[in-house]
Length: 283
Image (cartoon, rainbow, N blue to C red; front, side):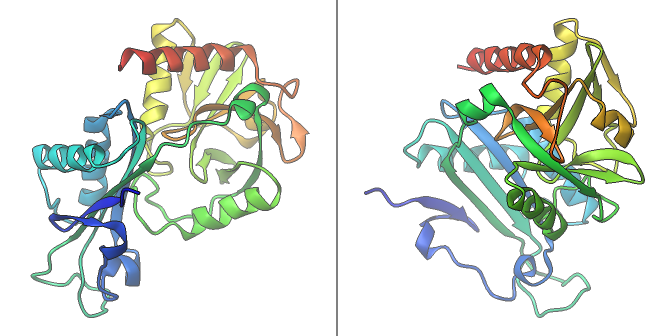
């Protein structure tokens, strides 16, 4: 049986031998950034876009990027090549490094860099066909949700609420306005048009979010990006969630009530087909 290899601070190591200090600020303070990149047929999906988002997060938390774009490409390619699966999910994490516990930034400390990969979990065919359910909750997260940081406890609690309700996702509202899901972006379909929340500090700028809007515009589907009220979400013809791992999924039940007719709608089927066609074009 092949041992899983991961990249940690400049070396490829077996997973069970990859260790960091208990003083690492990622462990102690949640002081770091991460990215999750799907890989299809050993080709990272929109890698440059993911690396730009990583840079945005690192800039936002004032953590110098430990590698340039070319170095990231090389490390990710090495990690992908070391795995058995052709379709993978690459996780990378950068923390401010190990130092005596103190809120202030330490001086002269090297960041901790981890890159690892696992087989990509594809969307459940039954969920694609029948749709999924979601619950809702107030968005109690901090004010910089556009940064993909490892401090995810509010997201964890929201996701757990969904799990305990037998659902897949928890949709969040701040001051009566849709922000996103605990681990996804949310789209509203009404009267044949796609409505998407504004990409600002209230939500993570999803790579799949961008692609869905690109595909919609290319296919002539009306798109409107704006603030979306909670009542509009509850009155939607269709609701979708999007993420790198779940792609585009239809939400057919929200807080125990059906969305539209309670089945994946025609717009979802259209977008799902466009998304799969796009993936095929990457081979």
